[in-house]
Image 1 (cartoon, rainbow, N blue to C red):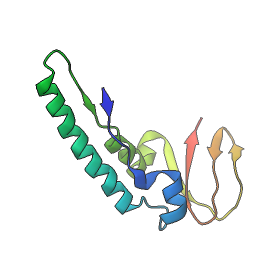
Image 2: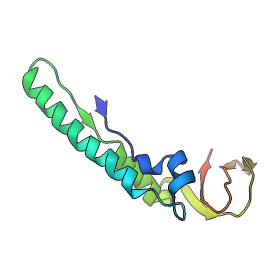
Image 3: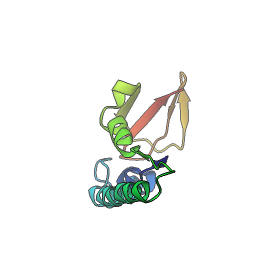
Image 4: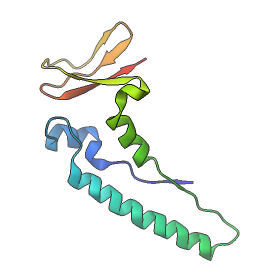
Length: 108
């Protein structure tokens, strides 16, 4: 099994530096998508060359984007927070705060 690359435009460093309103960065996501297309083609070629082996492409990228697009469906939520704390734990809900960003809280 070979997993594809996740959406680079959604990783914390890109969100902190290049994001507008907490959205994923489209250009970096497109780079990931292009790589994944090539990876899928490469695995297909390897499967046809090596008949005794099976290379399986696993799409993790679309699952990550699904979590980000529909967080409440998976028990997560976004909040607008204007505080500047590193981390706070309130009633078993962990929040990471960054000034002016959309914040993702995760149930523990």
